[in-house]
Structure formats: C-alpha cells, structure tokens
Length: 137
Image (tube, rainbow, N blue to C red):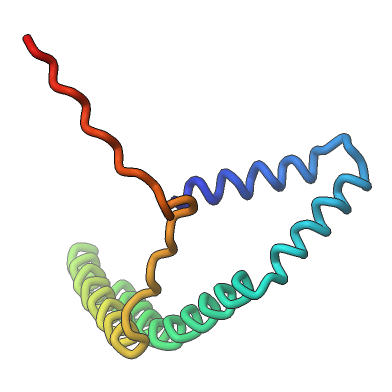
C-alpha cells in the first residue's frame, strides 16, 4: 500500500512540476487539491495521525538516547581489545533495542494500540471472486 501511495504522489508531483500545460493547469490542480485537503474527513484523519505521532514520539526518544550513549561508551572503553569493544557495543545495542521496544509497547498500551487500518477504496459492495469451475477430465 505504501508503494502505491508513493507512486501516486510521485506521478502527481512529476506531472505538476513537468507539465507543459502552464500556470493555468497548475492553478486548477492546486485549487482541486485544496478543496480535497480542506474536507472534514481529510482533516479528521490528519488530526488523528498528528495525535498518534505525538503520542508515539513522546516515549521513544529517551530510550533511543540512552541506548546511543551506552553504545558510545562501550565502543570508547580504553584498555579494551577491539573484540571486547565490539562485544560491549553489541550487548549495549541489544539492550537499547529492547528498551526502545518496551517504550513502544508501553506507548501502544497507553494509546490503545496502533491506528486502525483504513478501509480500501471501493471495498463496499465488492463481490467475492467466484470459484473457477473444475475441469472434468
């Protein structure tokens, strides 16, 4: 799904930026985009995504920073052999990854889990694919 969204955005941006239709067509596209952007359902989704991102972003940076500091300390130990430094860095990285995962899980629990998936466009009233008839041999 992410690939499809990226493709549509890329095609739209390429058309607008590379269009020979001129300023008039650009203004038409811009006007239509603003109409869609300012629709209430779109703005509701925008605010939901912003709230979700804010709630998720609050917990993770502390765990990431602590992990990064531990990794740097493990790598910069004086008197340790390169192998010991590597082992220390690996252990610190694993600990940091676990703490980031714990922070994510706790923020998921606070926010009630991840955001629900959006309904696919055109899924209403869609008919299931009919079974292919079996060949009689």
